Length: 423
Ligand code: NAD
Image (cartoon, rainbow, N blue to C red; front, side, top):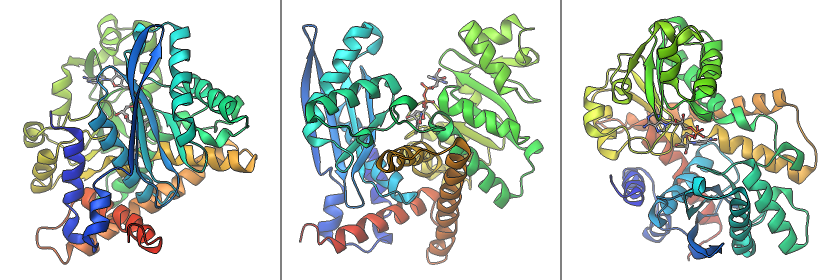
């Protein structure tokens, strides 16, 4: 697989000709402001740890912390750059950051996990804070990990500062609606796209790779609105149900059986019994209107893009398509809503959490959702219409990813210029 940081640079380079920036500004965009690294010692073991702070021209660095045995510095750098574009494209007052620890958390006891989380926060404490760098959960980290990290940070600094971390438990100042936020944001994107393509929900078939937090909530809201979610997959297998699954029953069954495929095989327990077991690869090749990658990076390769039979891809995972695949999709006229826009619902509700923390005043869930809808609808509309305007001056047209990047880079560059950064 391509080095993720090279992929991020290639994506940025694809809009170089569309944004007017001096070389020194561009140069700064291609590198994180700072990459911190260390080794955290827990129970006699050493775990490499990173925090990449890409750009803070628009506001404090913002981005998750992942615990995974395959974390690399380049992956964290790439993700921190993607966070800069993601927060800018939806208009949040944040920059981009990302953190990671090279560890397989399944091999840690609960006590070791807590000590590792606290060690990370102690190490990052001088470089984090509500107005400096605001971490959040990512792969294999959750609200409990954020609670330990916040507690450690507050102990070190002798303060109460809930806005220093988002994705916290509600009792510590977490926002209502954070769990649903990313999938729901993706659903708002689906609705915007459907309106423009004149799709009728009941005739719109959706295949979703990944039935975790993001995949489930997108399926849930799409199903409620009458769309047909005809296929879903998890790490163990995939199911295809032409008349559409019931996401609530499917989730209940998956929890009981431990896997989607198990639901199908046993039958009778939930609605997917009338479906068909397919492979994870088959799911990417189904004839549907919308394919939603909501699991892994780099799954839409050039060859997948060539054979895919869809009208649109909504990228809910981070970095699911390679730059080569992007080119194929563009040539084939397949609409691709890029990750930096499609999955921005999560960081948007993280932003709402931070705002509520700074005010010490908390909102009801419906208020969170209506504010999320406003932000997602506006960002989608501006990217979509922005592409139209740019494409008129460009014979080959531009992709939605390029349009999103142009909007994001323009905002970051404008902030850098008025700050006279680097001059
Ligand atoms: P999750 O761990 O809850 O779910 C991941 C799902 O992917 C699981 O169902 C898992 O079984 C499945 N999966 C793993 N390997 C697979 C394979 N080979 N084929 C099919 N399915 C497979 O994670 P999540 O929070 O839902 O995140 C999913 C993606 O969305 C990640 O790329 C993440 O970075 C991105 N994302 C998440 C959020 C968020 O708020 N959770 C925000 C932005 C982006």
